[in-house]
Amino acid sequence: MKAVESMFPKARIPYGTWGSSYFPAWQTSALSEVNIGQFAGEAMASILGKRKVPAKNLEYLIIGSTIPFHWKFWNAPLIASCLGHRIPGYHMEQACATGLSSVIIAGSEVNSGSYDTVGVLTFDRTSDSPVGVFPERRSYRRTEALVDVWDNFGFDPSTGGGMIATAGIAARKYKIDRSEVDELTFLRYKQYFEAKHSGFLNRVLFPFEILNVQGRLSGKIDDDFGVRQITLQALKDMRELDTCVTAGGQTHASDGMATVLVTSPEKAKELSQKPEIDIQFIAKVDIRTLPGLMPEAPGFAVKKLLQRTGLTMDDMVVVKNHNPFAVNDAIFAKTMNYDWRKMNNTGCSLVWGHPQAPTLTRTLIESLEEAVDLGGGYVLIFGCAAGDVGTAAIFKVS
Image 1 (cartoon, rainbow, N blue to C red):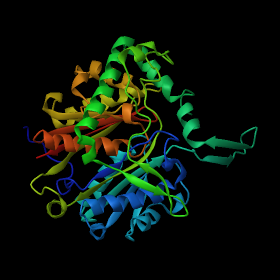
Image 2: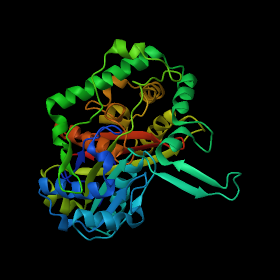
Image 3: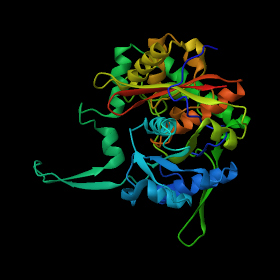
Image 4: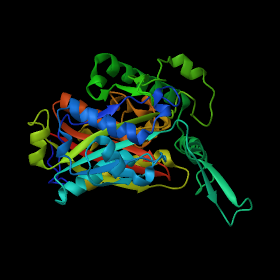
């Protein structure tokens, strides 16, 4: 394995201190009726308890979310109170890249010596998207109403197009073939269900019970509700919504949370379920491509990351991405001369859904767990984000 200098030599991710909820699809579970911030804080406390990590170890909290929730003004201090540990912290967001950026910020805080142990908690609820009313003196209507999730997904103020349009534009630019996209999508579903049936997902995902205001059970979050087996023929029969984009070849809105700890090397050995495992931050980049070409941005980010580190795709033991469109994977494979069959071995957001902020956090958690199973190595995770942005990061598991 090539030796590459770490971007944060004094920061580590202790093995097995992470966890995620399942990601039920929009309006399919009791999560659609809760304060997602409160749920996330309480869920993090439950995960830490099951991981045998006392919350008192946390000194700081970084939360990531993209959709307004009730009492969001109080952000991290409120969530920390729901966690049961009154510590400071702050909130950040970077659209779909929020999960990865939150972990990187935590690594920076620990590396600088500001804190010894930082908790990262990412969450979002796309169900029942909040509606905001904005006074606009320059508008003919004087007042504008914004449905946070659907209006933002449907309209990019920089280009005038929606998210789905970027997939079609990029597919045409790279001359992506529809049959390849269908085959790729079918494989992604197969990978997810194989990981699920093998028990792999049970090691990173936790079930939760949701209680109503009377304290009675209103539902259990114990599956990625909304994900169903699909046949290749069914994918081929789907109508194109844009070039190479069908209902089956794009992700779906969902709800959920995911958490991970970032600590000093000494603290990592203390908290880790397997102290002999060392997880380092190697490098991370963001890049922005031309307007309306979001699906090509992750590949550009990966290219820049590999150039910066001197590593190659062959050096990666795990390659996993946030792929809201199957087209993303096909474009990445074409631009990087990489076989898309070697990616996303335990599932991906194309299949299990997209609650936005926790999407790349769950991606990272699954990637690190897979790398441990494979005996360690370099882990590459990447994805796109609103505004034609691509993000990519490399971690090293030893």
